[in-house]
Image 1 (cartoon, one colour):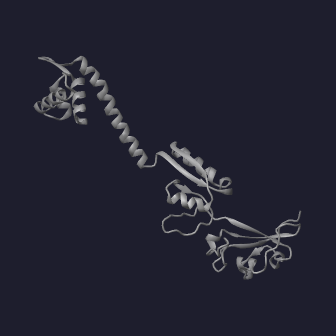
Image 2 (cartoon, helix red, strand yellow):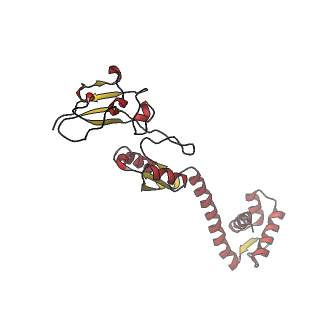
Length: 242
């Protein structure tokens, strides 16, 4: 039995006439009559009573009509759901997040996504950077949000925004005495911050150096900071004392 047999049957049942159903289906009458006979043979019972004035459903035909309509409706629904899923309009998306990214632009981004894709289920997972990479490779998540990822040949990355970073320095660090101005104008780089041993990050006399997000201004040196050779904006800024 094919779906076209159900469509033929429904047309004949609704038109109560083989000839009118054939016209509706753009078929000639003899082939349609033959298809209805084959359908009745397949079902194993008469679906129509024939007369000179037309056809009428038998008791079995009335039950079969209900099920035939339901089957075709389910097929149509399946087609529509598949099309919607293919367009990303329904389904499920698993998103990995970590740390302060949840308090930045991501909540607004997710809210806009839910507004435009109300039939998509959004599931959040808390995973650090390494676990996100592994989960992407295992297809356990759809997308991950993190900062300063390395380049992977098997994972596509997109930069959503650039952020200014702030580095707190001990008052004895040479850069702490600088006034607020761009690093480039003074020939300074982020790498200069690490030329001396790190000081404890506490106490009343701290200064700050801030820069654009390293990925936007230079290659990472393994510690998450640019080497400064291609630095964009870099600022030394005094922090108020408590």
